[in-house]
Every structure is written in structure tokens, then in C-alpha cells.
Length: 426
Ligand code: PGA
Ligand code: ZN
Image (cartoon, rainbow, N blue to C red; front, side, top):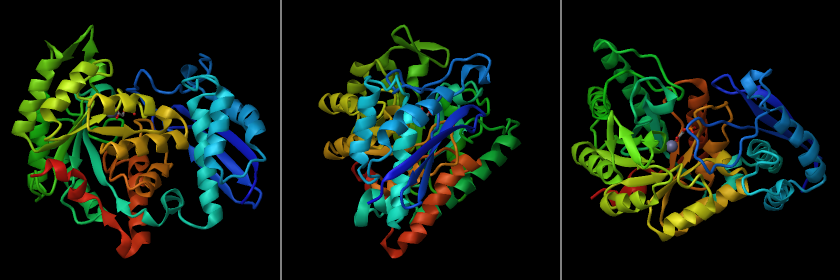
């Protein structure tokens, strides 16, 4: 048991060079804990609010000094003096202090930075690794990574509508090997793209951003790279993608590769892709407003592949509850800063588990070197993580931390592998 005696935030930069918030918590025992908050670009409409200064004289309006001040003055005043192990009560206090539905008063960035820093400090004080503090003795599952190796949408200027083309080394024996598969395929992909005369410059999440013309072409490159690296597509490594379809949903239809498409046409197209390629997961195949479409998509493909809701749920237990009731998907993306506290994030994960929905813990396109999500994914036995390409320090650091955790667990470590996708693998 240790009292929180000081909380201090500051403005730092994220991987895109934009300001974000970092907070440090000091406990009575002298132990400290730090957390830095990432920032999304293709954000869901109903995400908790990322408070920015909107002062055009600083960082083009993107400064976070207001959020910093909210931590240092308003939140600190309330939270200093509380016992750091009372995470749920602390999070509830902050939610109440904010008083809005979407954390727009204090900022989800401000609130979350305190929420996570407290967990980090408390774990440090107990002397057990963060993942074990979060999950206890049953925290043993290393996740299947989803490597984003080709970037499109709002994360690159490749002209591809689909935002992320993902490699899932489901058949690897452990996490370390999964990371090796991903890295090897990534480098082969770079070589093949270069040979074909494409640019190998990279997008926000470390994936390449070549102008290969179509989603189908991008998928063909992935298959080729998997094979040339010596792996079997659909056995060692599967494919996934995040369409981030809210970004190309205009006036009730999808504007995809130059064509206007209704929801049902997008579903037909996805079914065709699933028939042609070893795809095991599609995220945000449809837009956040298109609930009816999501239900139809799940009816059509929900037995064959994982359908992840990101923008549609924004890690919010209320929205996920609706999705579960309506069978609008079979999986949910988990981003701490979409909801704004550790407690609520855990509520959403628990809800998903009970409904037999898969969860995938995710970074944001604007990241820092913070590795909280690596501990969260193991702590909660979630089984999947999305942290970009196996390239760029802010992406790789999450994967490196998972290797350290795997080492720390030793023989107790269990790679999620095929088990997490069992219902889709006949
Ligand atoms: P974002 O994108 O971090 O830019 O919001 C990630 C995603 O859509 O999954
Ligand atoms: Zn997404």
C-alpha cells in the first residue's frame, strides 16, 4: 500500500512529430511510474476526446498544454493522497471529475496518462512485472502479432483505400519466431517491391506505401513475399487487413477504388477476397455508421474469418454491448485512448470475453516508445496485438517488450497461435 504523493505531466512529441502527453506518478515509497499516450489519425467518431490546445501559434494548434495543466492542477488535486493500488476507484474519481460522456472536459489523453502511470508505478512497487500485476499468475499468453506491412488510407499516400495490409504468423511456435517470420517477410517484400520499380518509402506505421494500384494487387504482393521468404500462406502465415472503411464511406455509399459501392457490394467483394486469399481477419470492413451492413457482413463471413470492429465500437463497453446483441461482428479492437481509462478498457475486454468475441490490442498510428500495451495484451490473455510493421523504434519496441516478457515467463509462456483462430480453421 502506498499513497500517491505527486503527479506531473509534460508535453512530448509522438512518432509523427506532434505533441502528446507524458505523465509521471510518484508514490510515497519513492517509486515512480510513467506513461506516454499515443494519437490516432483515422479516428472513430465516438472516441473519447483527445484534448488539444487549438492555439495556432503552437504546433499548428496541436499542443497539449491544457491537458498537461489538467493533470498537474485539476487531477492531481483530487488523486494525490489516494492509495495507488485502488486503480478502479482512482479511474472512477477521474471520470466523475471530468463529468462528460466523452472526457471532453479534462481530455482522455490527460486522464489516461494518469490512469496508466499509476498502474506502472504500483506494479513497480509490488516488484512484479506489469503484465503479472495486471493479470496475475494466469497471465501467460503471448499474442499473435498483426504486422502492418503495406500502408494505405490515411496513413500513406499509396493511393490504396485499404489502410493496413497485415501479416499474421499464426503457425509460428512462439512469439519470438512469429517476430522473425514477420521481419523476414517484411524484408523480402521490400526487395520484391524494389525489383518491380515501386517505392519502398514507409508510412506512419512502418509498412511500405507503394502505389500498387489495387487492394487485390497488394494482397498478391503479400502472398509472394510470404512464399519467397520460405513460409506457407494459410498455414504458417495468414493475411488480414484493416479497411478503415469509415474513411471512404461518403453519403451512404462506399467510394472504393474509384467505384461507388453499396454495403452489400462491399460484402460481396470481401467474400471474393476471402475465397481467393488466405485471409483470416478483416477490421473495419464497413463504416462506423453502417450497423446494418455489419450485421449482414457477420452473417455472411462471421463463421469463416475474424471481423474486428474498431471505429464502430471505439473500445466503448456500451457500443460493444450493442454489437454483441446484434451480432454485428465477432471481434473488437482495443485502444486504451479511445475510451480513456484502464478500468473501462478492462470492462470492454471482459465484455468481449463473455460474448466469445476475440479482442485485439492496438497501438495508434502516432506512437511513442511506451510499452504498456505489450503488458496489457499478456496480462489479459488477449491473444492478438497490432503494433505496425516490424520496423521503426516506436513499433518494434512493443514487439521487443513481448520477447522480454516471453523470456521472463520461460516455460510458462504460451503462444496464442492457432488456438485463437480455431473456430475459423477447419
Ligand atoms: P489510427 O489508425 O491510429 O490512425 O486511428 C489505426 C486503426 O485504424 O486501426
Ligand atoms: Zn482500425
